Image 1 (spheres, rainbow, N blue to C red):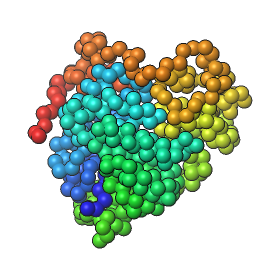
Image 2: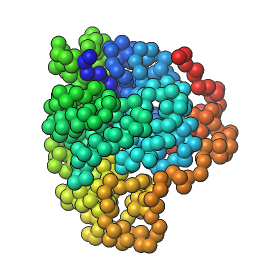
Image 3: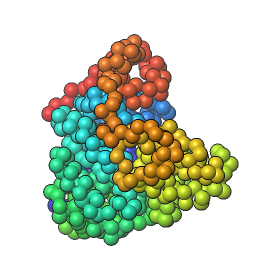
Image 4: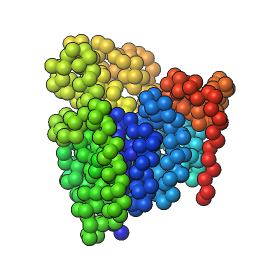
Length: 456
Ligand code: CO
């Protein structure tokens, strides 16, 4: 059995390279070839794709999913799901999490990859249980990062918990692209030795070393890898599907993808890519590797956010200071992995600390909430002095944050009954508030779309 491949161009590919702006029509262009290429799955949906549909493209993300499902008859569809944050940026009530999972599966998703920014297992449970209840394939992803507490043993013990929770597979989610080849080998080998779970590796080429890391992961026995078709690969995206397929051809790891189908799909996506180069959304900078991210351990997306925040404040000369402050803030906060929403929170705090010339003089509400335990359990001890400086004697919760959130779905459904066409619309509003409401106002007169009912 060769290595299995998940194609990411239609989710992470355009998310990493040009702000998730591919339209549904563009996504459909190459889909029937990709469907016939022999992939394990095609990644199609996630927080940013959903958000960009509503916010920038005036498209219904649910409709996109249904259209994709109609074309994809042979290959499983995969989505990325932020645990109790679903596809949004805060914790939602359990009823919304469960309803979202149910509707995602009914509209066409086969595999749900669920992760929590802090790897707090409690924040995964509701989504995991719902995925199993509605017959989806459940993959739990562990956010990979480096810190004194994020050792191989730490990940192995999490992997054992993930197996106990009933996940069908485990993903090492290296959102920053900082997993070094030998670390990947040791990590995957140890997890394979200690669990029976199929293991998938997800990473980014940002630091310029991911083909090497993938190869060592394969040698350690990784079962599935995430790659992107050539036009949307490399740089801040994933390694190239066709090249990996060639490299492994004829070996025991041969992914056996259909080269003609890949080439046909690639030539179609090349034309799409040209459009985004021409309109400036694809900045050639993101296509070149940036070894600095290995030094600073920040994801590519976070680095470009920091640059844009500093540019707005006319303080780009402070970039080095901010990059040095990021690890300090991480340490104070108990070493959270830098993935949404923590990457934005830590980045903003580091900028504020540097710009104000005093640490934690200004603190965003999200960091306040984090220190009160409202995002879950930090991987390591939070610096008590920093916590007290910011939240004083305010209460810190140690239970699962969503335990404090009352059911939301029925109220929203009632409140927006004149605007919504179906339960999917309620979920769009639950997650994206005003952005979804504005979008739905433009769709008010359209006919009600029911969830499609799929054959077994
Ligand atoms: Co990614």
